[in-house]
Image (tube, rainbow, N blue to C red; front, side):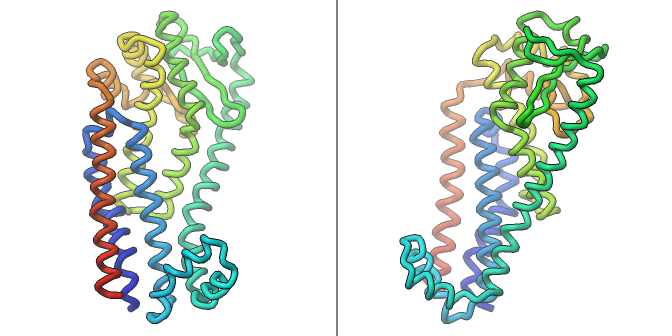
Length: 305
């Protein structure tokens, strides 16, 4: 076997097997949720790239693998002659293997986005039949006793409020819940969920996929809470979430202000330290992992090259 497969293999093992557990248990992630979501995304991107590179190297002859780095640099520098040399070095099987590895999660991501869009379309059609538009709230009000506030993201995004929520929430609490849902829409969190779901469908059973599917939705809820807290008091948002703790939205493509993660989020909102130290800790966490993976992979190349 081409020993140049070892560096991407080490990278795949580190990002797909070793890093997800510590990241899921990291305390700083709950205080810097957007940075934590970025960390999950970087792990997934690094794992996919490593697997694609490893698959390509399986079909590259030993004597040609040494020149791949030079050819890649030449291609990035727009050198036509060297790009032609790279094309001669890497045959169709190698390129095909890399393209397949990269295309599978991309295709699953697109498929998940289309499925979610169809679900939201059916949901929106039902809302048009039973709901009424409230221009003051900039939301659709539906008659239902259970208190709930949720959003349907996408191009035709809309926020849904039940009459039960209007009955029990104060004006400030309702405004906080609406800001939370607008944060989901503005942040395009449905795209992130689609990426996580597509990645999990391709790499089913991988610790990275399993942990990301469990952690990223909660982190996105925390990120939306943080954005809502820019304009409202902590106790107001916490009380609104508590009032809607029992809310359940069966549509997986919708984001609800309530739900099963409410208890954890309320505790976080009411007892939250400053974000400067968690962000610094998160950056250090990501940097130390990179400082471990990159030298090991580089050393393998130098020793075995």
